[in-house]
Image (cartoon, rainbow, N blue to C red):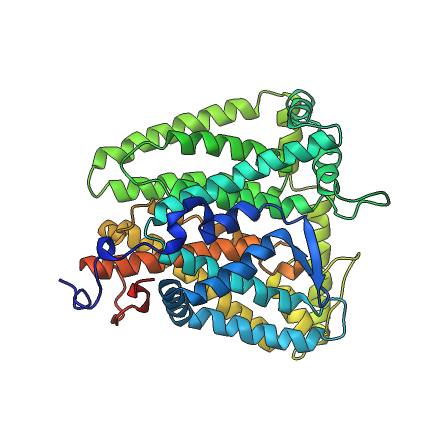
Length: 463
């Protein structure tokens, strides 16, 4: 028996939070349901644009502080990840000074708000009695609400998903899909004038859909075939192709072999034949993908053209990086403040921090990223080497995918590479689930793979 076990009541004995009496109204589920609608602006407060998902963040974090179990989870999360969060917060303070008075002075403030979303979603996941059900419902609702709402909006302007899918499949017409369909929906609330929201809003949407899919797949209890998850995976991948966000597509495609590998390595501890079976399935899938890729249809040509990496977008990235390095060399220690090239900040968190705020900012960002990356690698190593350390009724291999989008997009994303709300939510889900697993392992007396001494966990307090 683990030394903590006498201090912590068993999960079954603790009363469920009041929020779980109405499963679809759980704060984490509501946050996921609203997360896709980041193009819908509901107002402005002190120059801060208030988007629809932000309302869920504003409600979730204060509510979590009023619920003992969620409040304890938030405190435990902050304590456990202080070595990662504190350097980033110090970086934001330096950045705020460096950008003050520029058009980007709200950038660090926006990041603090997103971190609040990170804490809020992690706290509510941690407080959930049916944590897998919350993940499953939240992921499904995010995708379903997006599809239904966009169909209603499209019909209001004489379009439909059927029209967009038909043009995409038969003619590979990505220009119509991106500019004639998605941007038209994004700007549907506007009346006249130039489009207020660019087609690049699809990038944030693509991140949301992928994270929602990962949560849905993670929420399924191991040991049973997830047919619904497979169907939803195919649907989301098709929508991601239509959204035409290359960075998210790369992460999504590479994530599937990673899931298969982790699953096979974990199963190999119990069933060596599983590795052979899954390797065979992977070969068959790869063969099918190769045959499809060489079919020469308009759809394949349109999508394949995005992965040649010889387009204007790739060229612009390299121009940005060279320009940023030149500015860094001229102002190595203190940075040169906010600057843009061709109307855009550099799309890289490390170069942006170095260029805007100098060496100290760069080093703090480096510590933050290294902490996240090592935590991710450590998690994957633990679930493979010690499969029994994962005790949550969820699929650990899909949990492992949650940090992949933010870790990758910090190198190439807009807003100077800073994680957007959906990316912070993905990190919050990952950290919250890992913390919940650690708590439940301590309650059961199981080893969690964490050598650090454990104290009584405050989130055991009943709501």
